[in-house]
Image (tube, rainbow, N blue to C red; front, side, top):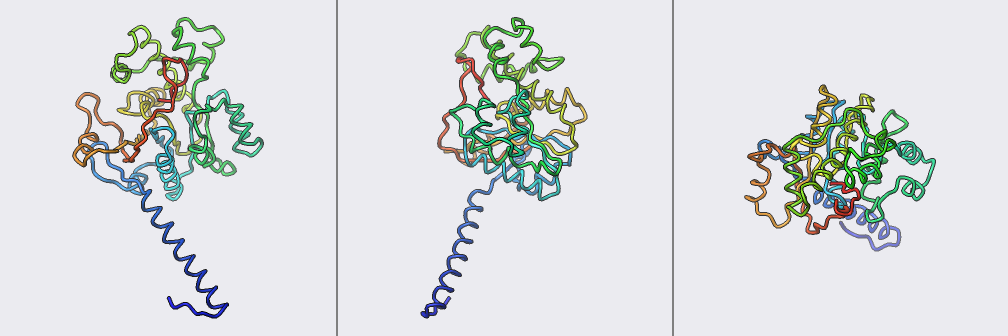
Length: 316
């Protein structure tokens, strides 16, 4: 580009340069953030466009996430935007909101209350930045028949289950449980026990697993309650989704006809190519981790959820 050193020509050329340079930066940024995803069964690389093309309208897509990371949040938005580009009407279900607060969620997404009031009323955890989930919560076009769903169990109920067990809940607490509640299947309990690493006594672990199962069952119950015909995208902790044993299993029991797809995010920081391939392979005991696995590099691995030891919500 030849710059003309007249006042008008120079300014015009300078601004053209800025626009072109800015577009180059945006292009590079998008390229850097593009997800590499694999098929959980074969390890074959698949694009976001390709995996979304395999999702039929009206399905439920579980996004098993690692909480509090920008690259994961960006990946979720890539999936949501591609679903819309391919013609899906999309509902979003969020683990972070309890179903008893649905009216508060509705007020927020329709602009009836501000964000600060909303976060106070839903009891948003102070340790977690809502900025990671704002775009997901506001993604549905609520004027076009799309919805944002609050799907999780009330914290006071799961806290009581973890502390005292299901059998010792008050009648008021029991009223908030889903009907026909069942605990997670045996292999899910095995994985849960392994994740605890032997740090809790078995009697305590079984109460914590009851609480974990209440989360899964409540979310599955709420998802079956919201039959809009739209594709549902559910943002939920990775452990709930892996190997199909938690939330996907409970939804399949409550709604056997539902087409369920799972997509997880796997941290590959400091892993070699062979280690990544090995991590993606179906587990010899538990099978396929997820239908699709997207790779992210997260050098910071600090968990920002409270522990079962503290009897708070874990968002695992």
